[in-house]
Amino acid sequence: MASDSSAEDDVNLTPMLDVVFILLIFFIVTAQFIKEPGVEISRTEVDNTERQNPLGILIAIDEESDIYIDKEVVTLQEVGFRIRELREDNPKGRLVVQADEDSDAGVLISLMEIINNEDGLTAVPVSVEQE
Image (cartoon, rainbow, N blue to C red; front, top):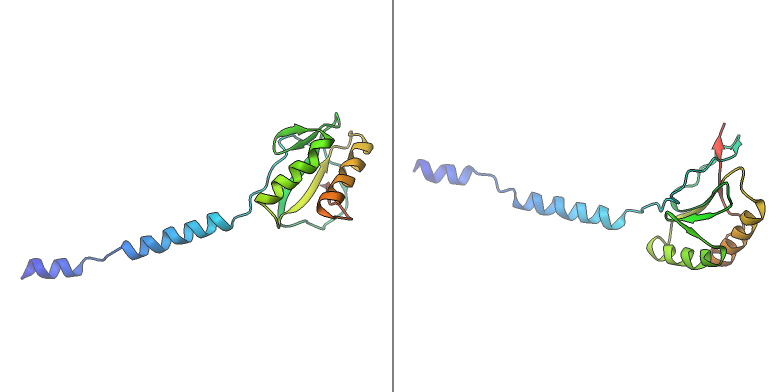
């Protein structure tokens, strides 16, 4: 009889593991991942405390005025296609531009026009260094 009571006293962990795996799958599916531009940018310093959350797509312009999206150099003609491609993965994420302080302003303006055409943003958020 002693062996029968010890078998009944064991705890069944299978339902708990099922719940843990379901929660893990839920968090992986609903997570929003940030696409990093892949280049270090020296941003302009300003006195601004407004934050853009949640971030989803970062577009960087380096000191040579090259545009980086998802760790790759892209031309101005490719930017619209790449934004549409990244929007399929992250439709709700905010698009933010990181412009180096030594980059050409004309490239930034052209990039903002493309973003306006693709996303309809009239005010494009530009990432800056906080003082």
